[in-house]
Image 1 (cartoon, rainbow, N blue to C red):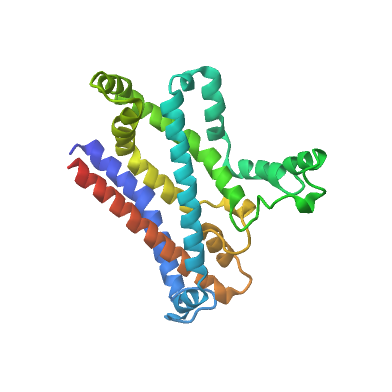
Image 2: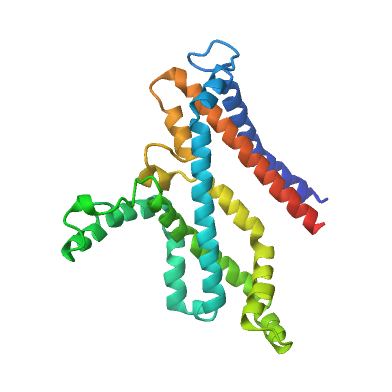
Amino acid sequence: MSNKSHIGILFFVLIGMVPFAAAFGYSLLYSFGIIGVVNDGFTLEFWAEVFRSGAFLDALIYSVTIALISVFISVTAALWFTLKFQKKLRGKIVSFMIYLPLAIPGIVAAFFTVQILSKSGLFSRFSYLLGFTSGITDFPDLINDQYAIGIILVLISVVMPFFVLLFLNVYDNERLDQLTELARSLGASNSQTIWRVSLPVILRKTWTLIALYFIFLLGAYEVPLILGQESPQMLSVLIVRELKQFDLTKISEGYVVAVMYTILVSIATILLFSKRSTENG
């Protein structure tokens, strides 16, 4: 290994791993009451209270459900667009329209969604003008609702263009147009070329990024903060809420949630990359 490689690894450890380890260690000590403004020694009470309240489990199930639905719809739609319109997607106007959401920050997309989907928003006003509703109370809850419709819509609008771009690159790099032509020349139907050639190749090449995006969406903050309901909340929103409580005795519970979330994400990431290394090996 060259000196440049050693320097690169050293910078990665110093910039990436050391701050993460320090933050995790601080959170772990705080969660056990070893450090903290009002803590006076080691205790498991904060951990026990988090498990008794069920807030972490509710937030975890809620976050996993939203992330799964968002990724599934985004990947499915992106695959359909890629395989159906892969030639048209390369046009300047069409590509601009599809990739534009990638340049919009999540918080901006969330505020834009509020203006459109809220009970006093654009769609509600059009619904009233067209006679579908008699007032804002008749318009359905599409934001801050129990089904997280607004959150899912925004996450899909942000995530799907990324997958379209990713799948198009795989389509080109793997020369799928030539593979599908070869499959057809051997007697395969259009559906067979899609299900047995195109989809397996694309998903095999991108499943790691799809899984990483799922993990990334678990930690989404700005969008669920603006468009989500008070309870349950996504994990990142719950953690920040707990850490900013006026009751200083409750802050340690926020660190408990943060530690558990970090452990789960770290385990999932390690398993993901260990499986990928095994497959590549």
